[in-house]
Amino acid sequence: MKKIILTTLTCALFGTSIYAQKIKGSDTVLPLTQKALETYKKENKSVAISVTGGGSGVGISSLLSGSTDIAQSSRKIKFDEKQKFAEAGKQVKEVIIAYDALSVVVHPANKVTKLTREQLEGIFTGKIKNWKEVGGEDLKIIPYSRETSSGTYEFFKESVLKNKNYMNGILSMPATGGIIQSVSQTKGAIGYVGFAYLNDNVKALHISYDKGKTFIAPTIENAKNKSYPIVRPLYYYYTIINATCKAFIDFVLTPKGQKVVSDAGYISVE
Image 1 (tube, helix red, strand yellow):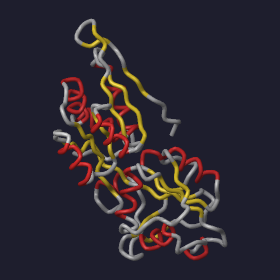
Image 2 (image 1 turned 45 degrees about the vertical axis):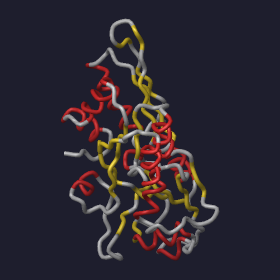
Image 3 (image 1 turned 135 degrees about the vertical axis):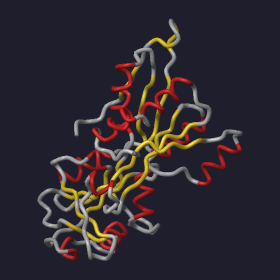
Image 4 (image 1 turned 30 degrees about the horizontal axis):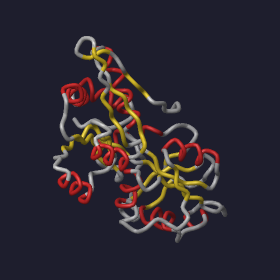
């Protein structure tokens, strides 16, 4: 995937005034929103919306502070975050706009092609330190993680690690692109990324959630038929929605918008 850059769509709204709306948050959702905006703008030239990443936690906190109109998130809003909105007198609303097959990636030269959830837990909690322990060569395992503000970090901890803590000193990356780059350059590396970020520079592993009975590859088909075990919903959150943002969210949920979702490497909600 080409390097993701900030997409800003600006134009006149309501005749002569320029009024930019903001979408901020999850790096996983970022490419989806960018592509959806590109398509949406072709038929809605009088719209002004900008989108940036930064992580799900950043998006939700920005929504709370009023510095963004929509928070994009790869995890569900937390109870304590909901409480903060309530204390501020704001009612936060949730929309599922797509699904993602969270993929575990290694260097293409790594001989390992599959891992169980238990093995992944061991690797990312620091109990398994060498690839030879999981059928690979005698090579130190170098795990890469997203940083704590990332919804992907939270979801991986919940689903794969069963809420156990990551190992001390794990290499944390501020963006998904950094994980792809690091894993592609380090033979002993392992990391996790949204499905849309997969490319030929890394190898996605087959994963088992039934203690090794079946190993499933992350594909759109396997995510849709629910055989791939690490699938998560992707969200937009908002409080007071204006006409511009509501129209864009509505578009994303239309068949045309959901085709953009699929074309961008995500799983549609249909």
